[in-house]
Image (cartoon, rainbow, N blue to C red):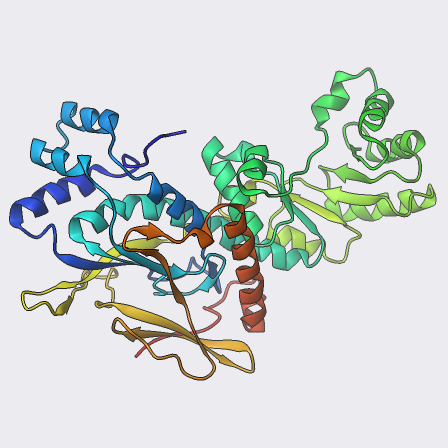
Length: 432
């Protein structure tokens, strides 16, 4: 684990600091905004995730001796800038959407107000965390919706790098998954963990029966036995023979799952194991889960499609300067005007408007303050005040709170938001 997160950034953040200090603009109060110009193609909403991780990383954003010595040796910045970095401490303010909240195109999910030389240094870290975690949570939320009330476990750690695996498990849990196979995520974030055995365990033994017997004797009849190593039907019969009719569950990881599950359910019932549950894995995504909606599945295990691949399109967040103080201490709105990369300048407040408890639109209001009207909810909450991180959003309790925020947000969205077919944003975004 890194002692400092300060070098989890791009070189140009530091070179901008050096040049801004030369021009005399480094200390100018600025407002930066994190937003996405559009939702991923076909998506109807996104889910904010990574906020708690970001705030945790911010606490360790310091340039220690090792970092400073490397920057000097690599000639990244000059001596004066290194002296500034040696005493760096973020003293600004950050507001953001609550972790677990739904967002839409141009939603200002994070707002940073700080001197330029402080705010710009956070850009890469903010985007790398929010873009990945939000992408995972947005995909996981769709899978949770497709699964209904059935048990849903994240098990994609072997399909991404070791740190992303922990982040993905956290984001998926916030979006409604019930458990993860990743033990570090369990330890770090108090997420329930699950897991029994892979095909390797069966293949280690002389035969399937020997493997099942060892597992049942070790973990009891409530365990889950993987029954498709050789022949699924024979595996089910051996499982019930050894564990009895109180066997906890069988897992199927291959074949046409709809057909396999239906046949296995009938077989289990015929053997008297009517309470034995069926767990399915094997490259599931929200569409495969939805297709199994009428099948007698009890538990889903999702790997690749919740941590990486086409099922997890990037959130597309950008970090843009939208305002800075002028010579007369007034706020000056600024914006990028390049083709297809425009944005609305100026500090904004965000409201969600409701009718009969259902969200109808996202309102972005210019200014530093806002009055909340009837049937409206303010979306930006303070996360960091004068450099002090709000502990509400940290640790395991922050994850639990984010999970509840997400649950409530999903109830508030209109019914079309939960459709898996490609479509437009569930609610419009309006600038006023």
